[in-house]
Image (tube, rainbow, N blue to C red; front, side):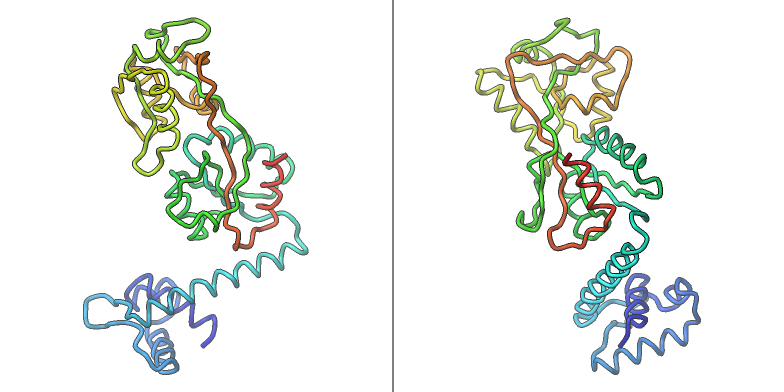
Length: 294
């Protein structure tokens, strides 16, 4: 069995039909069917259940798919590593970003592009669960996100480095503004509160709610929302006030949006960069991480 056959097998597993897979591979169906048969004969197993309208992987097929994907991944990484020995920093840099870190990511990409103009980028956005999936699927090499990194996976798999500590501020439309310079949590408690919260990442939400409880305050939560953009649009509509990291608001420079420091709360949200310890990092990813940590 060779790499070419493994690629054929993975395409069939993806398309679940030999005709579609052959079309994707730019080859005829009979040669592809023969290659699959040769693999099954060599291994002495059946890789696909052919009884239905579409092919289904058998238990042996599932094992081979997992191992084949790992072999192809390692081969691709080896090719990139070897090419980088001569070509230097080039190619595509894939980055994951939490929604609340978009302004930091865009600024760092601009800085990096100035120094390394031959780099192209792929950026995927998501919460911690999505970012963990992107990392494990090798869709991104690194992720910039809020800390702690709330992944369901074993935390020991990740390298995590802190970048900045971002102060939390009150964000409100000028029509609801209760102060001109700063505000207190008690003053915010008197307004409808819009909170950033998803079912899978609640660290920031818990920090804010703890601050209220420590002061004996009961916030008037009007809306829980996982989307920064929707929360900002609700603020602009005069629906209430939100407590969020200061850097988030810089991505939404809307007229009438007021940002107020919270003078009786010294709460910050840490931003960090995360990557898998056991994964090869391209030279461009290594240099980008060094830039972030400077």
